[in-house]
Image 1 (cartoon, rainbow, N blue to C red):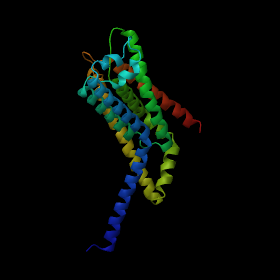
Image 2 (spheres, helix red, strand yellow):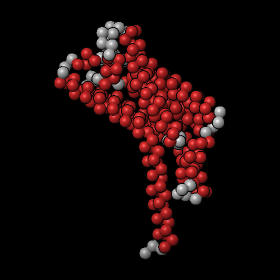
Image 3 (cartoon, rainbow, N blue to C red):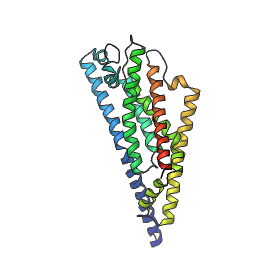
Length: 260
């Protein structure tokens, strides 16, 4: 039989694991707006694919082109088959995962602001990219969510690049988390936990940045998916616009924090 000390240690370990899971889930829930945006894109894209099979030729009517200007919006949810749809949705889900895990250490209020900003940004950038494209290439048509995907990739990269700097000047982030953790753990253990939590956040940002930069710098054509019947212009423009907007957001946040 286990001694009372061993039993207490086991109970304490389970308690800590349960608390870590609770804190993790509490943070992840703050990203629900961007998760809802992803589910909305996925649902509308599935409907678009279904109706294309029911009404052949619908893609041409809803494509982005100078003849169908409404397509700058509707084309985002139309795809040239299941493979095209799956590729876009998997890519968007992958970078949604990166966005969540590289921004976990921010306060709940800041996470909320970032998710609202990103959710609006990716739609705005994708529509802008499609609008510019149909004027530059009036004879072509385009469909697909890739403008949304690359805008989100650019935003995720921009935030990951500036996260460490933003956190370094933000005492409120640590204060909020520390007050929450202090309700469950002694002060010395709470501080140790925060150190581990932030170290993991830095590590995730670093891994994302290194892998992304290597892929982007050494294989730019593969990253932008340049090829026949692929709208590389919208891919590139959406990525750079998303990156610039996220970087600008971070700079304004640094100014705001510096004025405290």
